[in-house]
Amino acid sequence: MAPTQSGKIILLAEDEFSIRSLVLAILQEAGCSVIVAMDGRECLEKSRQFRGTIHLLLSDVDMPNMTGIELATQIQIDRPAMRIMLMSGMASGMLLLNDSWQFLPKPFTSNLLEEWMRQLLLGETPSRNWTARWANKWGSPENKNTARTEFGC
Image (cartoon, rainbow, N blue to C red; front, side, top):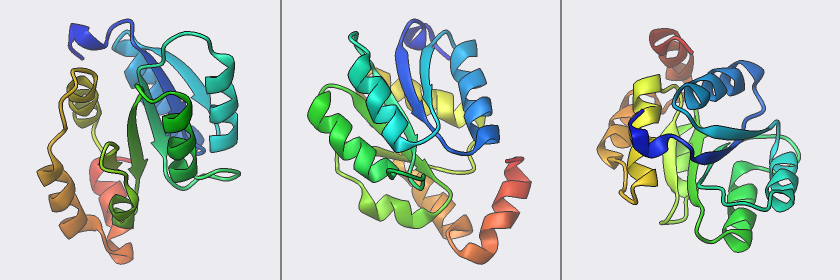
């Protein structure tokens, strides 16, 4: 990741251990500090306990106890300056987004995650063309397992 990300504080909510561990490693390697939660409710509690600036929420959409959509809605009230990026393996997640949120479709590469975070933290909007191409190719349930295999997730 570019130096812009170094020193940034990221709030990560992901219920799947393997994805959470992988994303955490990518973020830490880039020099980010990461506050990690296993579901939306835990993430919201950690956000409310943390007194400093959190630059970005990176959350799965489908989680137990509180969905990523519910979490992002509450985070936006509590911390209106925080950037929000939701991720999901289901293309339908794109339809649920607030205009100021970004959607990162799973599976994704570390390079794509890094590029989108760089753009968000600079105040830019990541390209939705990639998201549309992903949805066209992998959006149907029968293609989901193929997508995970091809991208190594």
